[in-house]
Length: 183
Image (cartoon, rainbow, N blue to C red; front, side, top):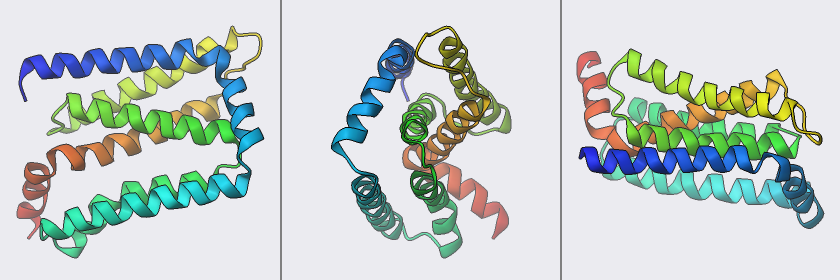
């Protein structure tokens, strides 16, 4: 990828992180709005629809690439985690945070070609740091509170997005290197 386009991606990441931080005081209003207009059942149906749609598109893409079953499971596992988390989290804010940080993870995966454990670790730590700062900012807001559990949710969402994004953007070389060595 060209350096110029990587710079654009980092600008998008910076704007996105700033959006997360700036929107913190307004987040409870957004969650209340969602609760008032969407029941938990409707949210579950929308989550299920989104997950099944994405699962089918990803499955067709994997099928077209003619991957083996083990490779398919390896690629699809972040989607399974995201689906599980979208149904298991009872707190609406945690669901939104999980998706929000999943998107951040996908953006970060676009900025880096993750081909070593060091880059993977640095990417994960970056996402975790953004989530930690998010919670620290909330300690100082009158209508919010910081919580270590939210840091974990943010990190899990970000790492899931990072994992999924890695396969969506650089799957050919990454998977071939992994599975050529093992088969």
